[in-house]
Image (cartoon, rainbow, N blue to C red; front, side):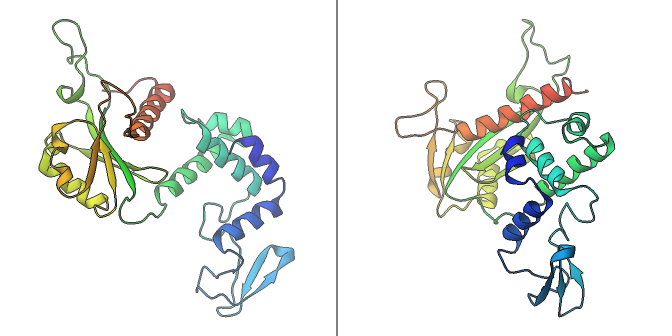
Length: 258
């Protein structure tokens, strides 16, 4: 959802509250303090009174909007800006877009990112899962080949990150050591994060994945020949995620310190 769509869908505070109540409660207000569903609405105050613990509450209790003095519409606009920015968005840019102070914009963006990290997900990834590894970090001056070529991949000193993403679902990324790319440790990582009973896993032709097919449906994608196989085999989802991550780093920070 872009900022224009967010403005059209949530033009007033009442629209924002109605949407939050539908998403969070689905028409059945629940007290965040005691869990009771017996309450009396207070329309003028946009709150509910719990008849069990005798406490009033609103739909924003326990969320990033709790005790905020900003209109919820500005929060919704900030959400659309932060989530749609491919190369991230600075506090100054956000402050200009929603017309707030820079410190307020910084606090909003940090709360949104914290909420994204705390989002609950099921224990294991399922259905179609793609897996790949990437090396992220600054390129150090000594990482030059005698022929003046940069050293990439496992020969570099960048941080190794192993990622697993469920198509149209969640992603799990783990910082790992280069020794963690052994077949035994990769298999342990797969068992810890992927439902082996129902998943079809796509990966590249790295030899560490050679033993995966013993306990999970497994297909490889040879990207040196084609990007998508005739049977639909590909791992473009996780490749795009790596591109967005590394592109966001270079566009936002331009340079990583040694």
